[in-house]
Image (tube, rainbow, N blue to C red):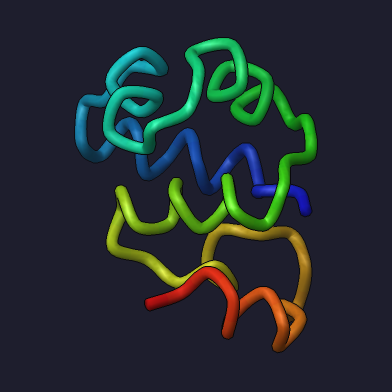
Length: 77
């Protein structure tokens, strides 16, 4: 899954959030957060963690038009 790096950067800027802070809040490594911000893909689980940090839907942050139903059922609570 690929999070749209421009949308992610915009959300981080709105909150004056660093990559380190994002990684702490999402429970992911700083390296993973940095790679995602640069455009790398990530697991559905990681994408959900990041979406939760911003109280956003996966659809609003990902580059895909929609997310597979299994990922939504598995990771969103």
